[in-house]
Length: 192
Ligand SMILES: [Zn+2]
Ligand SMILES: [Zn+2]
Ligand SMILES: [Zn+2]
Ligand SMILES: [Zn+2]
Image (cartoon, rainbow, N blue to C red):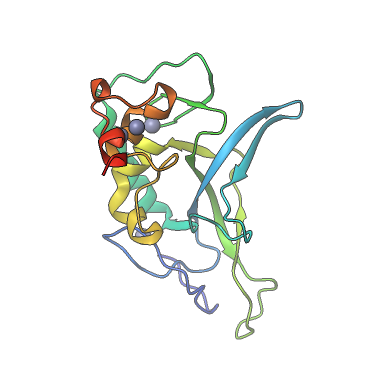
């Protein structure tokens, strides 16, 4: 690993097997939870924010190699699972190839690095993540929840579309209405 004299970013890798500080100017990945819309200007991504403009799901950071290793696990996890076809999708999950509809939450990973406002060592700067690779890597909610260990600790719960059950997220039950037929427990949970 390259070493710099710059101060720590104070931000660490969220991979459970790592947890190391991510240094400035080191290739890394930022994961945000967003929705997409098809507009006249093309595809527009919008991060999910709470009413006070804070992220509802805090951004998650990974070292370059840690994300690559998580991605390898993800890809082998979905290797034998056919993608969920859907006529209303506007983008596809880059892991499982399933469609994502407008307004459906997903994980967006961008490759980049942390930079300080200027690079004078010892000065106090808040680290800014600068995207370097042009196009984002899209991961649908069910795939994001395969890496649940990492993200649920930060977000407090798995990634959900609304308040559906875990199986519901996996089945994308909001598209069809919850029913026991799709092994969705939302209905019985609502009745509690
Ligand atoms: Zn790491
Ligand atoms: Zn997926
Ligand atoms: Zn449901
Ligand atoms: Zn359910």
